[in-house]
Image 1 (cartoon, helix red, strand yellow):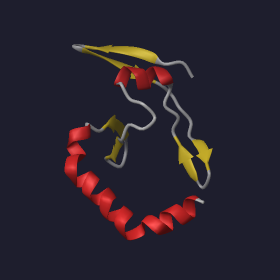
Image 2 (cartoon, one colour):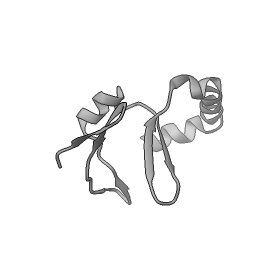
Image 3 (cartoon, one colour):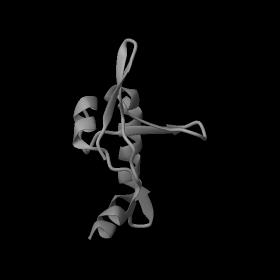
Image 4 (cartoon, one colour):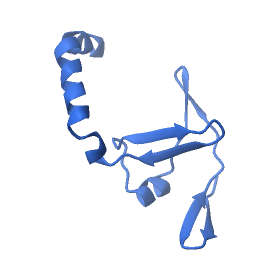
Amino acid sequence: MPSRRIPIPGIWRTMMIKKLTKHGNSMALIIDRSVMSLLNIEEDTLLEVTTDGKKLSVSPVAKDEFGDKFSDALEKINIRHGKALKNLAG
């Protein structure tokens, strides 16, 4: 569906009506390339998904928000489960 840019004093908002797409046993929300470009995100950008029970919000995570915590957690997972993950990857 086409997007609409909505003027709000001081900012512009882009609004789209989207349908979820089946992806395996889950549902996926496809983000158009134009929105990805606007947000300066790529396919490997971490996204924060939040909800208040009525609305869904998706926003890019600044790399330094995770910093060393993410790297440390990833390293621990690789140390503990590296062999099993490689076997699963085939």
